[in-house]
Image (tube, rainbow, N blue to C red; front, top):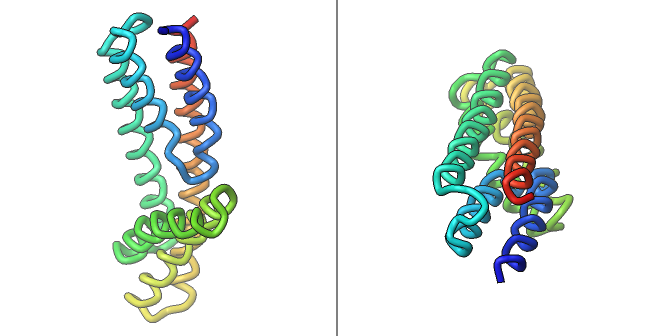
Length: 166
C-alpha cells in the first residue's frame, strides 16, 4: 500500500512544481502532500522534522515574494498604498483569472492584478498617472522575480523529496 502513496506523492510533487506558473502555490502543495504522505506511511522515508522543514521553506519563499514585490514597487516610487494594492490585486487577479480559464487565466490574472492593484491605489493616493504607472511596473517586475524564486524553491523542495523517496 505504501508504494501507491509513494507514487502519488511523486506525481503530486512533480505537478506542484509546474503549478506555480498557474497561480497555485506549488511549494505549499509539496509541503502538505509530503506531510500527508509521511503521516500515511508512518514517516517511512523521512522524518516529521523533514516535513516541518518543508513548511519552513514555504514560509521563506512566500516572504521573499512579498519582499520582492514590495521593494521593487518601492524602488519605482510606490507608497504603502501601491504596495498594498499590488498584494491584494495579485490575489484577486489570480482567483478571478482562474475562473475565466483555469490555466492561463490564473497566470495572466495574477500579473495583471499586481499591476492594476498597484496602479489604481497609487493613482488614488497621489492623483498622478505617472506615479501610478511606475508603481504598477515596479510591482509587476517584483512579481516576476518572486515567481522565479518560488519556482526555484519548489524545484529544490521537489529534489529534496525525490531524494528521500529514492
